Length: 221
Ligand code: CTP
Ligand code: CA
Image (cartoon, rainbow, N blue to C red):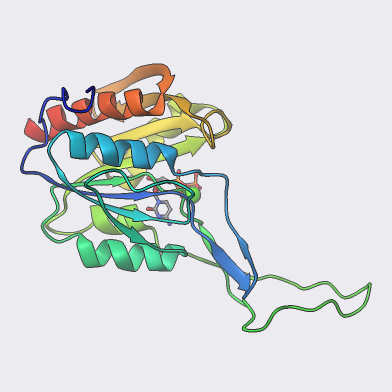
């Protein structure tokens, strides 16, 4: 009922999102990931669909059900997420980068499972930087309206404003990592060229609907 009552603020709009963590392999049975559950990104995908948008969700590994009416593309690594986004981005009106993308991948990942040798010998991992998906989309000549997320551990007001400018995007949504990862509720801080505004703590679906209203208003302007 709540969903059906949402105003169709994104009718006719095409929306692309990333959500969840990425998984960067170490060997065929091990990898590096993070504590993102995907709940916030999936809630925004659901809210965008409720608002009338055609929604594509590029998702890292999560335990969540696909929101009704949303087209979902599953990926594991940051590179795969980048490639899926670049394959879908043409013709999108809005890109919302909610995923907690691994900044680095293992350069010397093993094709075979690493085996214990002896007590002294531990494997050494080397890292290379992953592509920045949001920065790549934001640099496109025909770019969609870009919304970024930032999960910080402290000093959100300072890092949020700085990150919006560094990423060259009109809107950045900040939250505190350990107060959101895996939880059903969250609190958001919206940074745009005018300054910042808070969306106080609420369940993620409520916040997602509020955020979609904020985005739709800016998209229409
Ligand atoms: N992001 C992305 N691709 C990456 C890294 C980040 O698309 N390789 C996106 C995230 O989805 C998020 C935004 O960029 O929307 C900010 O991510 P964040 O990790 O906070 O920013 P970084 O620039 O990676 O800075 P930090 O060193 O603080 O991690
Ligand atoms: Ca990062």
